[in-house]
Length: 64
Image (cartoon, rainbow, N blue to C red):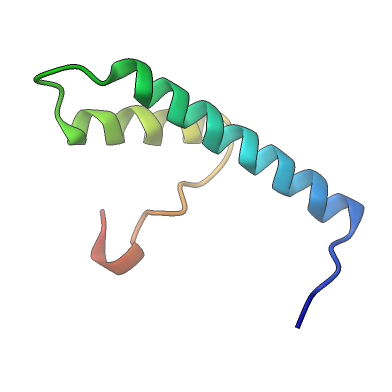
């Protein structure tokens, strides 16, 4: 079933997409030999929180 989104829902989805894109760009810039994935996760986590959002991956399938 296709659910039609309201303009407000579409705006929220755009904001979430921008936050996700910007987080990926920050991570991409930090990738270097010797940088741990834990450090990259911390960068993403802190950026997402700084934008007033909640990281969707927290708690997913036991991920912490």
